[in-house]
Amino acid sequence: MDELVVSTVVYLPPEEAYGFLVDFPRYANYSKHLRDVARRSGDGGAGTRYALRFSWWKLTYTVESEVTDVERPERIEWRIVKNLDASGRWRIEGLDELPEDTPEGVENASRVSFEVAYDPTSANEGGIDLPRFVSLGWVVDKIKPAITSEAERLVERIVADLEGSSRPVDLTVERRSKRASD
Image: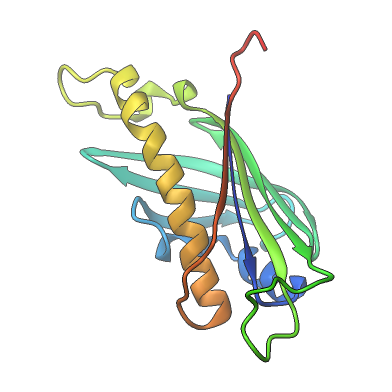
């Protein structure tokens, strides 16, 4: 399993950040490769299912996700239930002290973290129409860096919408790779 955590500070209280992040269909607006998100069932809380259609290079791929748990306003957990072994969460932590570089007039800040664990080799090869002479292994090697840049782009663009304007976003990015024998 590979793990990725992208976090940053947003200048909002946790409740406002949570309300924004729980709206999964809007994520397609922030991603270069996520084409659309369609709600299959549920009201946005635990048990809600979504179909996420990705497009990269000459490939399109749809995965189905499910919100597995929510704890307003601190956490939104999800897992992929079809076509890929992956799970993740949004964590929102209210900050007791504002960072030094907080803009004037800001009274609240939260740390928002996007966390995902995934096995890129678990993709359902039958669901991918690979071009001739292209192996799934080649695709996995090429897509790994794209996953990190997509997560960074997602968080940066969400911050701009959350706060109502663009600004330089200081991201903390952590990557870990675990082998099955670890």
